[in-house]
Length: 453
Image (cartoon, rainbow, N blue to C red; front, side):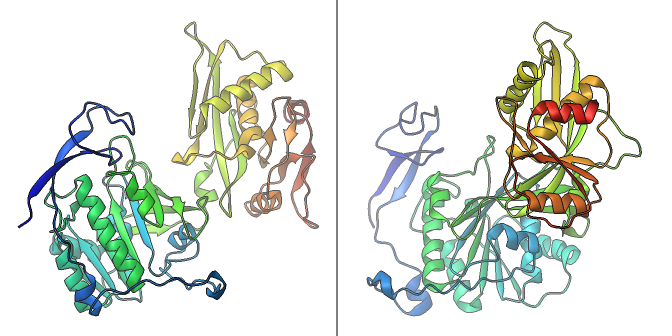
């Protein structure tokens, strides 16, 4: 037997050290270096157990490589398909992260039960009875879903050979361990080795693999940072457990855009796809309230209408507060400075609180005009006229700047019954017929005059 050796790894970035140190020289984090047992021995591979032996890679001239569009697997989930870029690519490796209890296992089990493809759901955290109880609540009847409770990768590959699934789901990567590494499950070396084995399996057999990953207290994926570089797609499942809505985002996607967004609603029988998120992101008020404004934003290819709430009050203490939820606080300070310099509003001695409803975060500059309208509405205690929305960026000179794909924003506002939308005068609008009043403005003073006289 080969001699057992130990090495020191940083739990944050995965850098290996010959001896212990207080600070990692790569990521500069303190007290993250731990000792792990590693086994230096000749590794066996999963390939002899699946297809009789390893394949030898050969070089191919780039002119001979086909450019046909990749066939994707339909997951019977429009939100998940949208975030992935149209479906699951064969041979791809997808990593899904999120807080404990947010619904990662529920989402993937729900997808596995509805798929027409043969799916192997591997769980290292729950028993067969626990999974069965959840499956009865989500989708009682399914003939293509196979459940395996196992944490050793060699046993998992043996079951894969017997079942021959079209899709493999691993819940979670932190619970797996390989015989080739003697450290405990969840350690840096185990996560790296198990992921590498699964990637080799996915690429050489064309079977897509979906991994569930835990996150740290800082909100980042647990394990070495190299884990995110190894996989093809990194998805983040987020939301507040006290609220019913969940958001699926793509942080990395080699086969599609990272700007797409999927929205789900947590119900008793699983996660429901929200096909029209604008309706849930806008509060229903019987009467007009000051400090609120509706803006038309974009998440990937999807136009959304969201509600912005602002509260301006006299500062009780010497230093006024600037608080933003779901919006960049530095950009809020910039917009307030523009209002004071270009429009003459003295907000330096007032507290300003800003909130984007629905629990989502937006970084689209097209919501600048809506933020300004909400702040001024709260400051003057005059509500914005009902049926009005905004889609424009504000520059440092107080000019109203154009935004991309304004036609889609206008159509979304018109579809939801809005009667007026403020856009930049420099935006080129290609719509010929529309039932919404398009107010074109060039300066912030024009908007203030139109809204508050």
